[in-house]
Length: 207
Image (cartoon, rainbow, N blue to C red; front, side, top):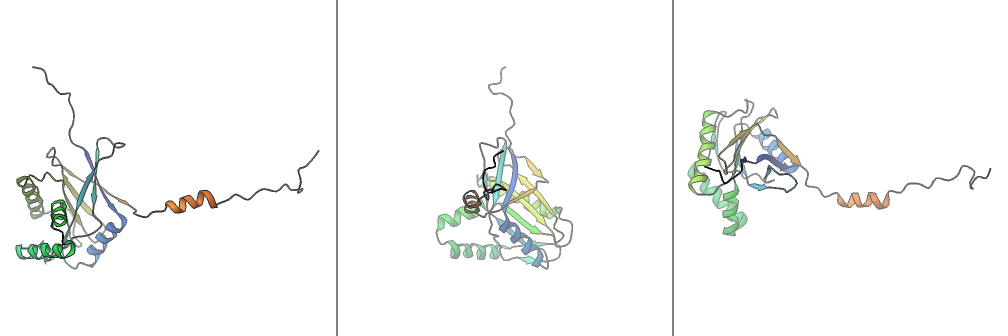
C-alpha cells in the first residue's frame, strides 16, 4: 500500500507571549494575594509566514478575576461565583457576541502558589484536564494553557495543542512592549544632525 501523504509533523511549536503591562499585572496580583489566587487570560493564536512551524499564543493584557475561595494551598470558584463573574462580563461588554467571544477564548488558567514551588499539584492536573475535556465536548478546539506563579518570581507552564493532542510544559513566556516609538525613530533620522567639520585653517588648505 502507498501512503498518499508525505511524512510530516502536524504540531506547531508554541510560544507564550504577553505584553509588558500584562506581565506586570501578573506580578502585581501574585505579590498582593496573601493566599492562592486564580485568574484567566484570553488567548489569541497567531501564525506568521516568517516563522514556519511556530505558533504564538498571545495572552490578554487584562486579567479576568472571578470571585474565589482562597487558602494557603487551594483556590476555587463555585458555580454561583462563576455566574457572578458572567454577570460582570455582561456589565463590562454588554454586547452578547463580545461576551461569548471573551468566554470562548478565555483558555489560559493562571493561579499562584504563594511562596511554594509552582509545580502543579494533583488537583491542578485534574483542573487543567477538565478544561481540556470541556473544550473537546463543546467542539471548541481551543489551545489550553496553565500557568502557575509564586512570590519568588518563579513560574510553571503547560500548554495543550488541540490539533494534535500534544501537551507541552516548560515553555518560556516572552514579554513584548506595546509602546510606539516610531516617531522617535523618525526624528532620529531627520533631526539628529552631524556637525559640519570645519577645516582647522578655516579654508581649504593649499600646499
